[in-house]
Length: 627
Image 1 (cartoon, one colour):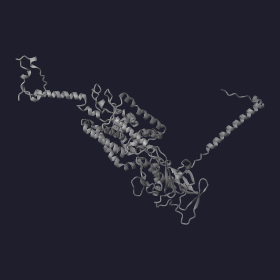
Image 2 (cartoon, helix red, strand yellow):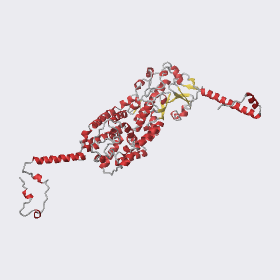
Image 3 (cartoon, rainbow, N blue to C red):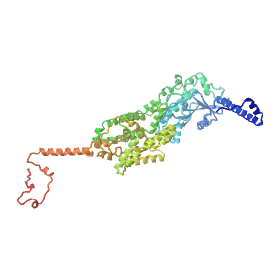
Image 4 (cartoon, rainbow, N blue to C red):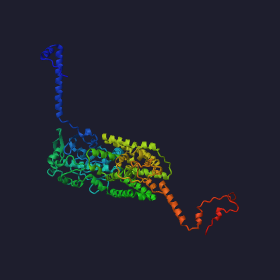
């Protein structure tokens, strides 16, 4: 639409009228207000926004410094907030995510709020943010707070280890069931603390080297000097105490060389800083290498176990012909899976691992995210190979600790002769889709919030039954026990219908290369022996094995080679036995008949008067037995 413009003469004539004059004034005022607002927006938009101090964003920092009355803004390289008491510098508070980002079990770093004092000690620590599944739902906030409280009073040199004592190092106790997360928290805190201490010229109490060689401590009796902080307030500083961050950088050229954001899990420090903290050079190794070295025993026991399982799968035909041996081998390996891989090695795979892999593949992939746990990395590598060769069944039937617990519980229930039930095939086929629906819901939630997906993944009782060994709140324990009871009455009930991890393994398992389970042309038409005996219901009435639902227990292969249970083999065996009996009869000399053979000849005895005349001889009278 073309805008209407009034001619100049008409415009002046319109303005001379009282109503037109008022309209013109309103229009001019409106334009002035608009121009003024636009100028204010441009002016204030060019002014940098002020940063709230760390105590406003994280009030828990006051518990780290009870005597503090003022917190500065986060500044410096690496960034940290100065903490004051009566205008005296008493320490620094900072967030570890600003300088150290080590991927943890969930693939995301753990952000810790840490405080250090000017005397070279850690004032305390608090977990600011994490997405760890075991910490989000398995470990209470009280236990987590008790763990990080152990860092109070530890030296800022970063010489802190988890678990076993080590000479020259401070020790903190681990959290049972959360070893990987605890190790990541320890590495995050110690490396961030060391970086801040180095940049601010703070040394640990045991360090004998001076904080600043160019500026030795003030002599006895020196008058305290005063400095001025960013707000212009006078800050008293005792003799020998380090100056605030920006002043420390002015006199300490070493701190300028420290990178603000290290690579994932690695903190690089210059050689001069290693001289400041001698232990720093020894600690500059990737986090995953340290964890692999610490878990050498578990790795040494896991790898042979996987080799044994590989031999079982390759020689399954040999074992299937010897049912007693196969049953002993299977029960023994299930016990190994439950007690070693599960309860000792904490090698229970989870749907969280799958969601983490998807997140890493679509964002910033790093192998260090998955190398952080050697047990899980080795297991996932083995599972990836078996998925392409055998399908889902190898992991679900042999390597899943919770699946092993279900299987052993089912066998125990059969020993105790407890009742069992099977779901009708039509209903069973419908229920199989339930686990895929659960998988899709968890995947959708992970796209929005990984923390929400982790909480909803509690539908997996793995954490309760395996990782925490039932040492958890009663609601989670009741759910896990209920699943186990149900699986004792219906074999692998949870695995068949609910498990989202099993559903995720079905997808790549569809591309398996070989058909290792043998079938006959009579299977399903008319033979139903294997379909009836398969308590997992992975064999259709038509005889096909549903590889996506098979747990590779090899029960059907035992029947396949058993000539007393497999109907085609039973018929062959009977024909073979009849043929051998006939050949034995043919080999007997003519005119002789062993007494042992007479017992197998049917004889019908009837009345002689009815069938024969008195002078006739009965057929049996002509038989003579030669001794």
